[in-house]
Image (cartoon, rainbow, N blue to C red; front, side, top):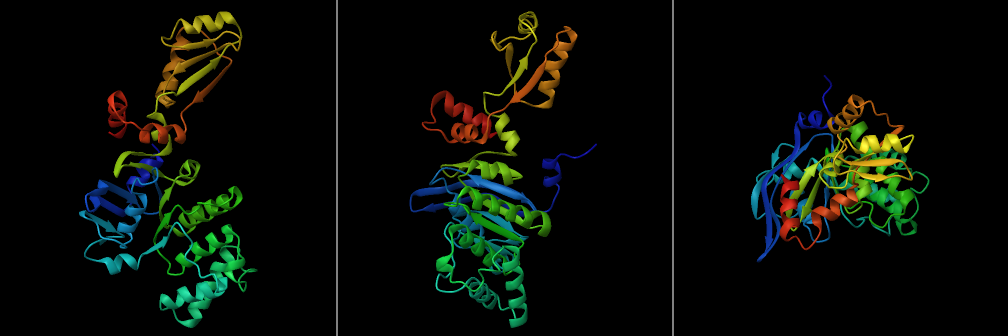
Length: 332
């Protein structure tokens, strides 16, 4: 039996773990006891609205600020007691490019090589390799001030890679980029994981970005993790999914409608919508019912909520009454 991607990922050694990680600034709680387990060589996406605590989580895990409570290990090192060892294994690309506009792309990379104490030959070798990898060779000697937003973002990530990190924190790395530049960045991120085995901790507000890149996604709201899973798992938790069946005639439509409670029929389109989570067991059960009744459908499609629905449902406000109860159920 082949293991699922989720189970395979969970069997990998952990790149990042955290238990009860919290952060307060005065009486304001920004992170409220979050737990994390991120396997090596995977992409983990942290979603949340502005002010949810995403950047604070990155700052803590990358040793930029201390946690108020909780424990964490990054690349096998204790976050509080072995901060230097953690820093030696990670790279951080923040929300805003940390490049020097007065230097060229090549000079920026050589500067990073010097800061990592690489010898001159190795520094220049790594600089040339990164310029080539990110498609910046032709622009290597041009001042960064002349770069587009996409070129600047690629250089920023290239600078993060000079130190050959095993874990990279990307805090909203494609904010402000046009769609083409964003997709180019996605391809680079995929390559880092697939080719180099790097672990990516990604924060983003672009739901398509998380859907495209992440092995697992966590939704952060008001400092708490309200849900976690693969993109498909999260989508199945949200109401609105259904199986759509199309029939050849009204007789087939009516026969099928009599087999299922709570269905929505469209006599003009000859379609029937059956509520369902889109999972294989649900789909198999629907087909079995039709088969036992000798009712045939011409076409079948599965409709599941997208990450927009997940995000709006889990972080929607106000979270009171029945909505609050449903959110607690999703978070289990």
